[in-house]
Image (cartoon, rainbow, N blue to C red):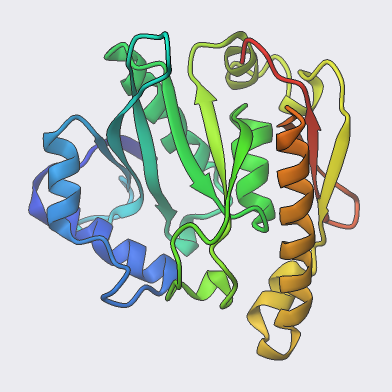
Length: 260
């Protein structure tokens, strides 16, 4: 049984810090300290933990967490909009493939809506097929912003020494699209009215990133896809769907988006 709730006390926050190091292999230049988690709670953010009730004792029972920070969107001619930036989500390796990432995100959504917050955003690596599938297909987020080398040099082993390019996921929490997908009525790949472009990430990308001698192949894919995303976004398209091929490749589907 998994219990998802707000983390309480320093011990549980320390467990979040250790889990982020375990997940990404961060060194001291990248790790988010306990103080930052505590501040996030204080200023209206979220630190939600997934606790395995079959495991006795903390911090061992913490098997996942999601951390967000509050922000304000300002647009010309519009009232400022409060939103959350979901900065970090991690699940312990032994507890993956159990849907915990989606459960944490859905709890983030419910908690935000309970406070009148209608938008959560986060960044994700366009080369990470599993993350893209979760964000776009299972949660109904859209993406129409591409950030080049957003974080600079990263100590994360998952980055594979590549530039930290990121897509910005926009999760419009009470939109018809998100409601339909979260409620299980339709996957994201079936909610777009039309698809004007597709961008592929080969399944071999994980192997290429993990082996230094093959990283030039991963970099070539990153640079080619970067150009494709930037061109598509400049034309007003957005990522509105994501599917996986029988070979395991990830395919972004891009089209017009409105009333997200």
